[in-house]
Length: 304
Image (cartoon, helix red, strand yellow):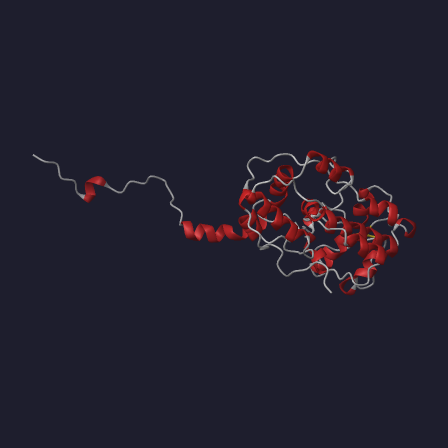
């Protein structure tokens, strides 16, 4: 006799499992992933809202007002951008006096110092708590007279980790009214172009392969183009990685392949390069580079 089960005999098993809807789950996660994927974004809980005194009408206070009351520039920008939120009111700091509040001129110099670092090195000055500090261009010390340690300048205008403050703001700065010394220094190069520099100044060895010669011609072409936001590391076009690979690492390998040791040593001595490149075996895109400049684009840094 065969056994035939009926619904009443079997019942409905409860495995205690919940099966998610992948599409709906992705939608629920999207906002969280978008936020977490960005390095920038400042929480109102992170800024300092300390001031010498509370203005008569905080709802109408201006950036200049906040600076004169002792609030730091970046913090003030975040607070104002949030719409002067009543949930995050200004707070009186009894230790703050007119004597220890930076003048607007001091604030201006700190902003310039920060702007110069972003444009030429694509990074903020670091606070005193950071052990690995970027090199400070001699121009800032010798020409501009900004001889304090870098943390002095960034801490004067920002109380939180500056990396959270989107550095893309440098793209929208107008430089036409800058001093001539500064404009002349910018003409020597900005971030993203240092590894192209040798190709504008040195001829490669005569015995390199035809493929390497094509790569050199591409590097020479880019090195002689006006500086572009498409190449600058803070705003670099994402298609460059696909088209050419990691520029610095590929250019480092190309430098090692086409210049003599004596030439490279001279580049380092004359500060065209910070140091002799190290071989990056995984970065071989440069071996197939064509001559056409497909990375400079039309977003010139120095607009005329």
